[in-house]
Amino acid sequence: MEVPILKQRNYLIASVQAVLTDQDLVNLRDRLVAQVGRFRSVGVILDVTGLDVMDSFSVRTLRDMAHMIRLRGADTVIVGIQPEVAFSMVQLGLSLEGVPTALDLEEGLAYLDARPKRTSVGPPPGTR
Amino acid sequence: MNKPHEPSPQNGSEATGPVKDKAVIPIRTVMDIVTARQYGRELAMETGFSQTESTLIATIISELARNIVLYAQSGEILLEKTVPGSAHRGVVIISRDNGPGIPDVQRALVGGYSTSGGLGLGLCGVRRMVDEFYIDTGTGKGTTVTAKKWLQ
Image (cartoon, rainbow over all chains, first blue to last red; front, side, top):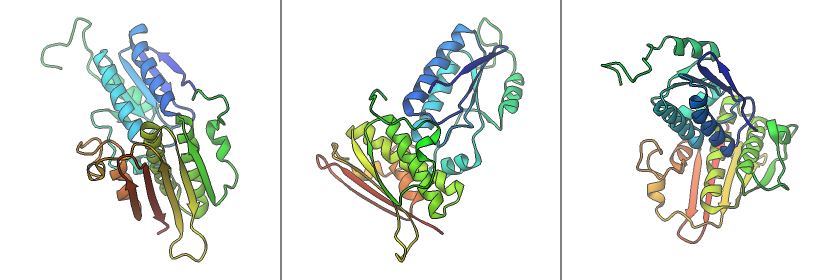
């Protein structure tokens, strides 16, 4: 199933509504990385509320996705990790290290809004 | 994904209702991974595991089924509730394939994929999370992983 990607201001929002196969997740990653360029987005929110499990493959794919989007000049925040999914990730030693997370869509938007603005001609001195 | 004859259990429709106490799920495609873990979640819930533990069991099944797809192309996942009267109550997960086998099991069992040292099979995490764990593998002889999780 294809995950819908919504454009909200200069952010992209993708909400996982149903169970995804590995292939679905890889497709989502590629579409988001591409659409950041098409819509000149500076932030991406991925809502994973509908994901039934986060295993080593999902975690690696999401980390890769966030890093690829970062290389395209936008920030990613992952929202909606359910308590039981968080429990399994911790138990299995899976980490989204380096990828910001927030409770839900609202907090994700707040996170992106709170980031310092970057100029369009490259990073200002003293930042990455 | 590309096999039209495959069942397509979107949104868990395949896994609703009572599940049998034992099932053998053929694993060939990424869709079969989803089928196996959804069945496993249902079986775990019926066995009496909490939603949290059932999610953990589904995650374990997902790891094992993916290893089949990635490394052996095809195989099967056997899911089973323990029979009444046995020493423990819980679920047994057996993952079987006739793939190339794991040449260096010790290395595959070390660390998580993120801490490196392991082979990225997720086996280390799986082993830590279950009460009994056996692996029978070797170059050319396929791989059988048995994982048992008991109700506390």
